[in-house]
Structure formats: structure tokens, C-alpha cells
Length: 483
Image 1 (cartoon, rainbow, N blue to C red):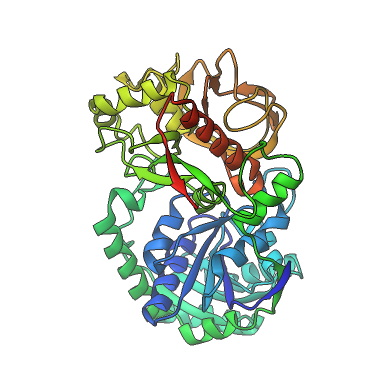
Image 2 (cartoon, rainbow, N blue to C red):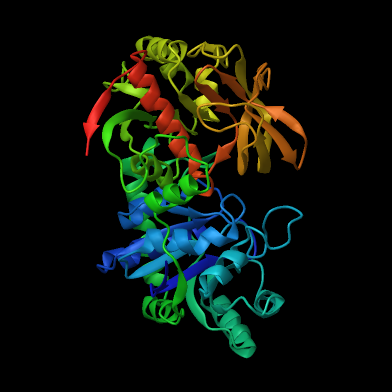
């Protein structure tokens, strides 16, 4: 059902990566939350790490808006779902304002997300090596696509009062409001490594301090009243509000949900326990995945492979998402009881959905350290970064997807696994290259491909049905009653 969404909103963009949009977006979220506003945090693109900082800043789940993986038609509904009941939404962009999926025009760009949300854009400009030329730069970004409404600029890395005066004069001449000025200063401590910022779960106390410092920087340098006024100029957004239960019901009506999956009007009867890996080593997940599993009738229970020596009681489905197991390989390897429990669960036919880090954890070894040994493959760190969107088709039936299921995903890793695919692969990539990838073995589906289940809700329903069947057979876990 289409409704009118009236949440004030801003998109924080930049001419290029490294301009400071994460600093500004996270700082704005925290600064407005400090004022008592309910702030809805969002991130354009597939990034998992920035939303963790957004969640710290706002106290709400950081949510992704990815027009490639979910399709442009789901961007506004997912935004409406995440921002329901909020006073303000802040969307951090990805890369440069007009950068998107390679060779696909505006698809998955920050500009496309801004247009789909009818949201004004604030451009964060690294002004460290320019003065009057900033006006030409901003004019180009403002005029490149007339449908993108550039509401103002925040100048970052400004060197002095004189430098600020020159920049303001140039932008006043160009007719672009300056909504903030941040001086050159040592970066707030947000340490990075090979795939970006260190996730919040690995440094929570320090991350809280970093977010507070970002809020202070932005509060001191930005006109919060003007930014809030700009956000309130966003017109009503007429769209459906995404609902995990309705998404599953639609998938069921389309024939994409296994028979007997109680997704509509609601889950009844036994509830299979789906254990989801978390903790510092497995930090990559989309909030909608747990919501879909719950709507499909599962009881979602988190566990930490670094600390827990057993799977949660009654586990009949296991989800191991992305993260940094290579950083924690010695600790993961040392937890022999849990490795044995995971191997026994997989050997008994329990459904396992493993993405990227999960794939490595199921391997025989990672950088020479023994892992769970579920897969006849070994993984290691590499100098080469594998990065990009993928179009994929399931090439075999599994607990996650029926043969022929098509979806879009994203690869992002500096590891390799040998072999790269099992005798029964998980996916066949159709774009930008053609190859098979991943492993299907019994109830196990393991792959490097990160996917967003909101784009294919039948995945959650199929996996929950497999968990329920495994519990019912007595091979693994057990059900918990639900109503």
C-alpha cells in the first residue's frame, strides 16, 4: 500500500572518496541525536562498516540502501521502513556523488539514491588544495544532473580564517550556501585496515569516543539549524513501506516460498532456532536478514564464535556472515569445541548459510590455522583485492536458493580459497565475468558473495523451512513453540 512518508532527510555526498563524508555524516547523526531527535541512519551502497558507527551515533540500526542489489524500486520502501517514527534521516553516500555500478550509468550511485528519496544533497568538499576553484567544482556537481538538488556545501580541511573567507566568497558568487566549515585537524581516531574502518564490534569503547569527537567537530563547525531546515524541505515521499512479513507473503503468492512455510498471516507452530554468528570476527550483516528470518517463523539467536564453545541450544539453522576472520584466525582456531560443533552440525545435514567470512570459517584452514573443516578447501590472505558487484544465478538446489534463482550481490575480500568452487558450486556469475563460485554440500551453502535478502525474500523463507525440516527430522537442534 502506498503511503506518504514525511521524514525530513539529507543525503551527505562528496566529489570523491576520502573527502570526509563519513566524518560529516556520522557527526551529524550524533549531533542531532544529542539534541533529542530520533535520527534514522542510512548508507548508500553495500558497505557494512560505516553503518556500525551510524548505529552508535543514533542508537538505531544502520541500514543500507543499495539500488544494485535490491533494485531502485526498493530504495524508497526500505528507507520508509527504517525511518518510520523518526524526526530526521541522514543518508551517507558512497564514493563520489555520481559514481555507481561500473558501466551502468547512475545505477547504485548516491545521486540515484538522492533522486529516489527526493532528498536534498549536502556536498562535502575537501578544500585543502584550492580556493576560488571550489566554486567551479561545486557548480559542476550542481549542474551535472538537474534532478539532483544540491542544497549546500560543507567545506572540509580548511586551513585558516583567510582560506575560509576566500572559499566563502567564491561559493557566494556561485550561489551555493556554505552550511559548515571544518578545519584541518588530526583525524578523529577511527583506525583503518585493508577493507576500511575497523568495525565497531572490535573497538566499542574507542568507537564511542570517536563518535562523540565527530559530533563535537560537526557541532562546532556546521550550522545545524540550517541543515535541519534544509532536511525539512524534502517533499513527501509517496511509496510503499517495506515490511518483512508482506515481502514474504508476496514471495509466497509468486510461488517463490516452499510449501508449508507459515509466512502469512504469521508464523505459527514450532519455531526453528536459527543461530547467527556475531562478535568481533563476524560483523557484516544487514538488519533486514534477521527481520525476514523472524517473519518467516524462525527464532534468531546470536552467538560469538570467538567466545562461545557451543552453538545456541536447539540450533537447527546456522548463518555465518561476513567479517574479518583472518584477523582472528588464531582465536577462532583455538576454540576447538565450537569448531567441532559446527562441523558436526553440517555433517548431520543442518542448513548453513555462509558468506565470505563464513566461507573461510568453514574451510579446512585459514592462513595455516585449522578451521571447521566442513569444506575441502583452504584459504589464505592475498595481496589482491576482489571488489565489485556481481550478477549471479544459483546453479544447484540448496538450503538457501532453488536452482535457477537469480540475484545480485557484491564481493569484497583480500583472501582466496582453493579451490574456488566445489564439485557442486553455489553460484554461476553472469556479469561482469562468467565463472562458478562457492560450495553446496548437504545443507551447506558457502560463498564469497554478499547478498541482500530483501531483494529475494524467498531466501529467508527457504532457509527457515530447511531449519524447521532439519529440526523435525531430529537430526539437529529442536523446535521452540511459537504463536
